[in-house]
Image 1 (cartoon, rainbow, N blue to C red):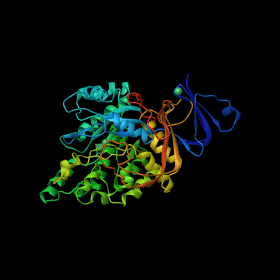
Image 2: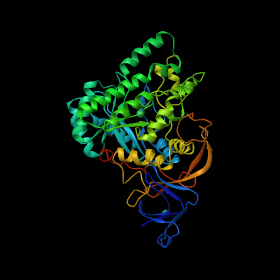
Image 3: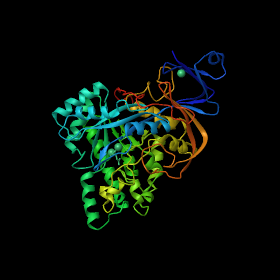
Image 4: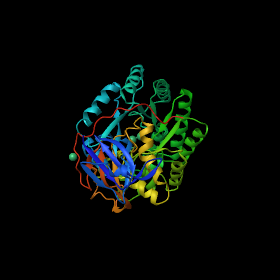
Length: 466
Ligand code: URP
Ligand code: ZN
Ligand code: ZN
Ligand code: ZN
């Protein structure tokens, strides 16, 4: 039996802060005891971590990543190997990635493909959501089986006609099914039919620069789709989780639905909290680095997102990590913004940016852990095992230095992408050491993990319903 003790740190969970030592046995948290007490002093161990002056926090749970996603004629540039290694560097110990159903093919085939990509390559544990691109009798039956197997959430798209798009009938049917089988529908809420009209009109006017991506994908069309998704979920009697919320008007739709008592949840991402249309407007095609959907919004929207995170109208911050290199990938859209592959890198940056948000006074320390670790675990059926530091939980633990300063940069990050969305940004706080099921993945800022340590982790149904 291997034993590790973490001594002298401030343990922070979504509900508590305490100066406590943590005993780890065989990959799980065995006990916590107040530092300096005889109980804690009596523990012997093979490895002792001195966490004096540091935070001891649950490993981050990033519920929205796209490693190796095929998109717009290319693939997201992080593999499961490089992407999970970068995640660990940033203090994230679990990702939930999206397996994709190809139109006309079974869900199972997509899931098998994604399992094969990830198997044996991940540095940290992982699970899958399923992107449902084609709702039919067979897919609906498969959803039941997937829920039983631990793939308990399904993403649908109101955007990207001809690719991932589902119409309202398909959405309603999948929601009705999830109301029965306990699955959670995750919605990409943008009116893609209307957006495609605006894209064609913009291009016809010669508006081809990256900034027009932000102009045609209007906040009102995010709000409209969010409203429609909520009403469809209400008709189906199903819970709903809206991904990558970026617009004030969309947060308002979620808030209204929650005030009515509906099980409606919202996720936002660091890029919407820290970046804006100013970035999309950077000259010399640099704006392409910031093309994602939903798009970055004018800076004024950030206040509504922070408020939503404080009032729990938004519950989760995930990254939507979907990196494409500036050279060779984002390039595909020179002269036509609609051909720029959509997505931003960020899996390595989330925990640090949200810690900076604590220092900036947007959220409390415990709320940081709640939105980045505990609630994503609860939302997607991993809580107890992931998302907290408590007896019985997996020892997925980060020793976090709240005083270390760092400058975010592509020159020092570990994501397999040639730019940082936060190049030059100074933040205070940095990961020192990361344990995944008790194994040292990052040790005093050195990678000591290995591809294949991370295992597929089946999930229960949502643990966050009213
Ligand atoms: O731009 C984005 N978000 N790319 C990833 C795919 C998605 O819609 O989440
Ligand atoms: Zn050892
Ligand atoms: Zn999406
Ligand atoms: Zn995504």
